[in-house]
Image 1 (cartoon, helix red, strand yellow):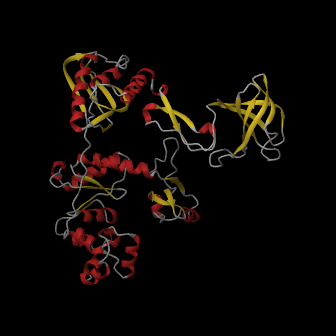
Image 2 (cartoon, helix red, strand yellow):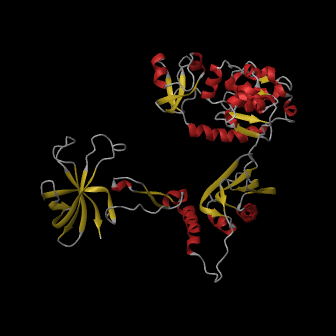
Image 3 (cartoon, one colour):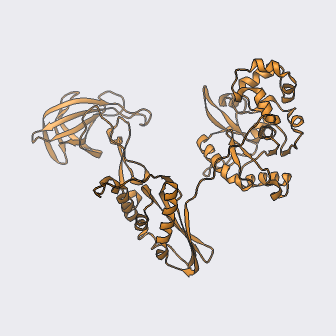
Length: 491
């Protein structure tokens, strides 16, 4: 937790560091480092209350989404020890190492290996092993670690632990504590009939009797481990090194598309990797506008992309894989064998992007905003699907100037449109107008002091219609005299 940022230096070891998250009454502590925990700072406390006691507290905002993404990766990373792993809560992993511990030298050795491997990733692990899933979790979170609990010793091992080790909610823990049941052992000694009447209507995750039975092995607690993500990869091994990957690309694409078709998937990303004889490798990666499993289309995408790859002294292994896939159903062709023009659009975008670059092929993305220049933005076409423009309550010009160009107003009606203005060294005489349409600054985005705008549709003598706005008002306290700008043109 000391690695606060790659761009900042972490505070000294004597400074308490906490991560915060939003709470109902302001930021609260999400987690604390060892220094903060030694001072009694616990998760759930309000940050302002902790700062009042510890002025030297260092606070960083917790990345909750990033933490969960890391946990999802760790679920599969932990399968180096066993094939059945699941996430437990927000920051725990459960591994069923039945029949796997002897491969690492025994139960104590596999726990040491887990702690060391997590430490190499910059993570502190509290590891415990027990015959039941709930007992292992309780010992890891509330006991001395690393801990090993043998079969038949579960009741004695968990007896001194607090009732919170059962995984109950805070209000249930407070209720049992008020009843004098502060530890798991005291709860287990209470006659079941009394507790059954009190918690008869409680859900399974809030019923201490059900949780206790799972911890002691009296009730089943299966481990529903997610399946390994399917990997789509085709490879070619060569008898001797070569320097040109093109002759082998077709067979790779055929094999990859066959595997994708069998799974009902299509590739959204493709990656070709060559493994050189000098133990180096080189990769070429590209994305597609839509899911595809057409070998010919894949070959066209790599056309011209492999010229810059360095084969070194040659390579003897090539792989083509699809890091990102999507479901792709089989579509029946039309009876008249006519081509669907819309079906050709993703392929066209892929070829243009492969030739010109991702930033050169764009389409519009729309944003709900008051400022006209912020409504439309250009984004790479391969980053998502195009969206329909928003429905506007007022007419907007077919062309906007970005940025708007300042015009010189010769004469203007007070608090009204200009009757004469000069733009690009040409004088225009207004014959009619419509407006104003007032657009206020977006206080959550614009800098302080930004002035409001009054927009006018102005028609000049030759029939052209301009969209002008006056920035600011006389006496608004946000600048000098108002300025006029030309922002767009109507048909």
